[in-house]
Image (cartoon, rainbow, N blue to C red; front, side):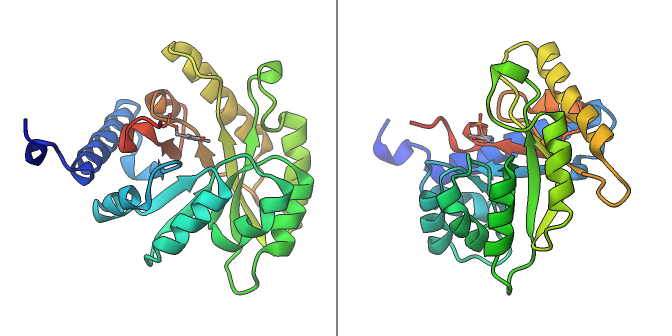
Length: 236
Ligand SMILES: *Cc1c(COP(=O)(O)O)cnc(C)c1O
C-alpha cells in the first residue's frame, strides 16, 4: 500500500462520527426515545485542532476539552461561529478565569468556591455559563464529584449565582465491561436527578456515557453523551 492509499485522518473522523451517530440513534430507538433528545459532545482532548476542524466539516458543533491551556489554544485557532466549547476536566482554582472567559459549558462543577469564582469571573458581555454538577455515584471508589447531600447544597448556591445557569448532572461512573453494572450506575444518576429536581430547576441535562458505555447511558436517560476515542481514535 502506498502512502496515497492510506485514508486521510479527516476521512476516518467523518466515518467514525457517522458510526457514533448511528450508535446513538440505534440506542435511542431501542428504548423508545427520540434520537434528537441526545446531544453528541465530541471530546477532543489531546487531539490537534486539525482533527476538530475535520469534525466541524462533518457537521459536529459541540466539543469537550479537559485541559484549560490546551483548550484555550485550540479555541483561539478555531474562531468558528456556532461552535460550543464544554469544559469537562478537573477544575483547578487558578484556572477558573480562563474557563469562565472561554467556555460555554462546564460539566465538572463539584465545589462551591469554584462556583463562586466562575460566577464572578464570567465576562459581563457573555451569556451565563451553563453548568452541570458532577456527581459521584460510586461512593468510596471515586473522589471526584458530589454525593447526594453535597449536590443538594451546591444546587442551593448555584440558583443564587446569576452568571451561572444550572442545567443538570454529569457523571463518570467507574468503567466496567458489564452492561448491567453500567446501567445500574447511570440509573442512579437519573434517580438522584429526580430527587434533586424542582420546578424552577428541572436539571434536564444528564451528561453521561462515553465511547464504551453510551448505549447503557442512553437507556437510562442520558441527554448528552461525551465521546472521544470512538470519534478521534485512541489517545496516545
Ligand atoms: C476523556 C473523557 C471522555 C471521553 O472518553 P472516551 O472513552 O474517549 O469516549 C468523556 N468524558 C470525560 C469527562 C473525559 O475525561
